[in-house]
Image (tube, rainbow, N blue to C red; front, side):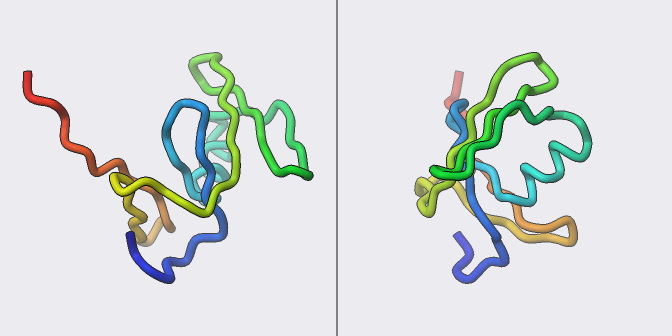
Length: 87
């Protein structure tokens, strides 16, 4: 993880993945996700994915050791660094 990375927020998805606020915004703008419900206190979002699944997003300050924040010209994103299991 990059200390002091320019990240406004991190969300833990009900699918086991983690997303930065920037990734959530990009998925919504690209219409890969459609907003369903947003609750402010406590903060959480429910979105419909392009596969017609529902995804619950909960804010978090912690990410697991296998998750890494990477920053490039498109902004910050979280990458799963676990290696695939050999077959």
